[in-house]
Each structure stands twice: as structure tokens, then as C-alpha cells.
Amino acid sequence: MLGDLAVQLAPIFHMPCQVRPECLDVAFARHRMRNQYFSTAILEAMQPLVEPGARLLAVTAVDLYVPVLTFVFGEAQLTGACAVVSLHRLREEFYGLPPREDLLRERLVKESVHELGHTFGLRHCDDWRCVMTSSHAVERLDVKGAEFCFLCGRVVAGARTPVLV
Image (cartoon, rainbow, N blue to C red):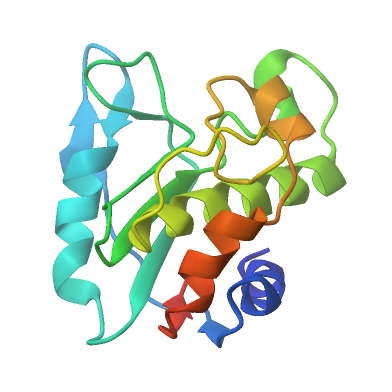
């Protein structure tokens, strides 16, 4: 799945994307009472792993949160180098539905592009079709596109930084 993600991200960002083989143990970020993982702590732990001049995207199966929200699909450092995305709530099984691999992959691409967009300095976009529009529910994620709108796309086109997944 990560190899396919890297292949799909490359043309969107107009730069090379590759999969790194190492794993990060995120047990330190687990909140025992919530049974979720603090995404900001994961981003901080990723920072030393970033290669100079690159962006690093982590994909995890654990459920992510930030203290002010019930959950997050992902989080990124605004104008930083790190982003993290969770498959946990992108899976149809989480909602009591049969698995749909195609939908999971589509959601993963959209959420990955969205979070990486934040690393380029993009904030949430008002255009509901743009991948940078906010998605607080999986239904919102499903209706938006996987591409940047014209304005958001111009920001990303100005940067040429490789993405590591």
C-alpha cells in the first residue's frame, strides 16, 4: 500500500516520493484512558528522522488524536517537514461496514496529500473540492478531490522538496 501511495503522490507534488523501510514505535504516544495516540508527539519523534531538504510522511494503523478533538485523520507541522496519517478511521470496517480496499486507498491518498499540503504552509481551503478543505468526518473526505485547487496548487508548485513515506 505504501508503494502505491508513493507512486500516486509523485505526480501530485511533481517530485520524487519514496518509501523508507524503517518503522517508528509509537507506544510512547499512547494515551491509556483514550486508547488513542497523540499525533503531535509522533510528529516530534519523527523530526530527527527527516533527511535535510525532504518531507517525511508516516502512515500508521493506530487511532490518532489531539487534545481538543475526539480524533484526527492526520496531523502535520505547518511549514514543517513531518506529517502523520492514520488508516484507523479511513477503513470502512471502523464504521461497521465491509472492507473496501479501493476506498481505503483513495482516502489514504487524499489525507496524505492534505497533511503534506500543510507542510508546504497551506491552511484549510474554502473550496470544498480542494484536497485542503477541512474534513472532520469521513463523508467530507469522500466528497472532496485528491487534487489542490488552483491557488493551493500554486503554493505547492513553487516548492521542490522530495517526499518520503
